[in-house]
Length: 247
Image (cartoon, rainbow, N blue to C red; front, side, top):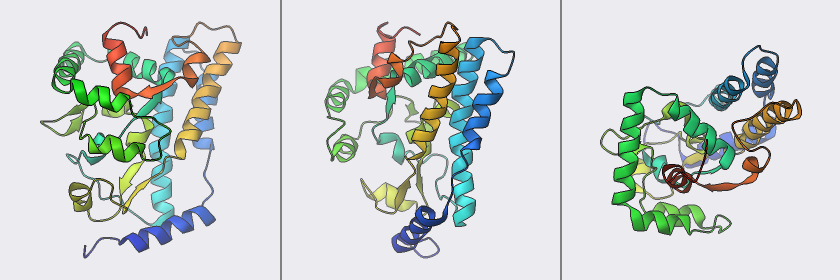
């Protein structure tokens, strides 16, 4: 692993982050304030907020990298993290699907065909994955052992088919060490997950929806119920395909 950071070096950097880094929450708050003060229609405000707050997670991680003087070694075509469990709220799932519905016809059709093949190829693995208790401390390990790709992963190109609106867990998992550790291990200790950023993203998204809801705006999600109902992404996509998740 010459030329790459070791696990101990990454651990020390993480300790520095915990002790000294002050997260700039304005990167999330400014998005909410700007959109609530805009003249955009409600649907546009919600969808743009969803997209921009996801980007705020990326911006925060870039700030963390600068603070720690670290650079991820993740590269295009590495899909290791695309086999981890992705749990999102019904609110996020609906906005994710609405974002896909706004894509070009060709891109949407590619995604829909991909989903059809996916659920035909992995029926039993999907059922097993959805039965994994999210509160199980070994949940990630059990899910990863299934070798079940994310329904948004194109296995030929090893690229995400909805990269710009991929969920927060997909964004916050990074590797600062030798990228080969991902190819050789199910759960490499060298990798890092900034999953705590989900809290700031979710709080901002909730603040945006709550303000619109309290103002009497008609929302494209059932607020607040949708914000507190969670499932694995393959489960939400299956419901969407079967017409059980109205967007």
